[in-house]
Length: 157
Image (tube, rainbow, N blue to C red):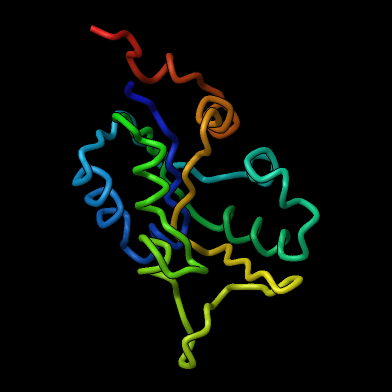
């Protein structure tokens, strides 16, 4: 079954000129981008998308970063889209996928814009966000106040 997943290209992705790299990786995997919009996030939108991070020590820096300049909202359609997109996204901490490939590091090879808390490394400047299963509709509404059906023809012709 085809699924639509929200992908958010974060400010550092746009500023570093990586949007086309990410889009090429997505479309090269057989997925289709059915909607694209440039968007400047507000503090309230960040709170809605990342409610589990509000009490994190790095949260104020993360909000400043995510609201600093334009992001790009993508709606991506395809068979097994969630699994494929999470594989493409990868992990900055484990050095996999696009997050690992484009993780900014200092001269010693340590991640930049990262915080170590309770022996866990958190990297919040990590080029893209992929909605978890079942969260696309909710996150899209928080970002632009619209439903999937407002933006994409969901009929199975």
